Length: 209
Image 1 (cartoon, rainbow, N blue to C red):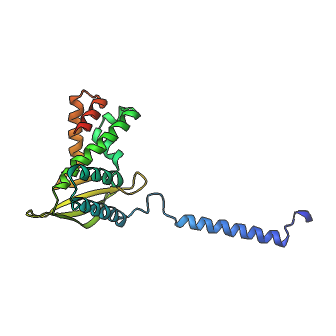
Image 2: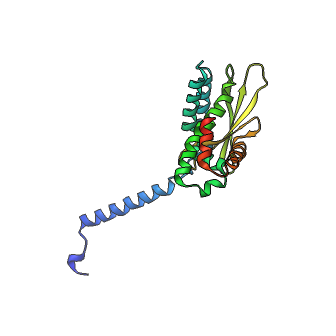
Image 3: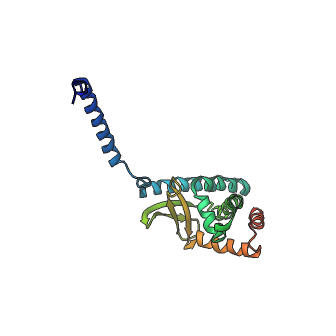
């Protein structure tokens, strides 16, 4: 080693400082959560708490049905994983559908499902929905709420929540044991079969419902 290659005291301090900074950065990275690992049951419950508060606000608003259904569609777009639900509802046909067909179907499906379930929630006028529990189920969380309606026995609504799309959203609702994903897959499948697999015709049907 030549004299010129021996680091000065200042250079040595800089080198040590750089090594320490790299070590600190590595330690910080080691304790950071992996993508998706930070999603908790509390996050899932918070999402549905917010969605249920919106549902309660809409059903108590006193608006006419068309305005109420528009509010439900906005709620659905905000809190639901619409692309996942739409793809599941379309079933095997989704794998061979073009990007433009899937886009058109997803838009039409969003309106259709919001109107359909919005009318169901509209039946809750005068009642209240309350979130009571949440628990992990396989790769997602189930949030349990109770609907208390006037003149009826309370019944449960279960919301399935995941962050697979990059943020927590619900992708299924079970109302009194009726599974939305399963029911819609059957319904949409039957509609598509009647249209001989024509997704464009199916979109027209959904927009008319």
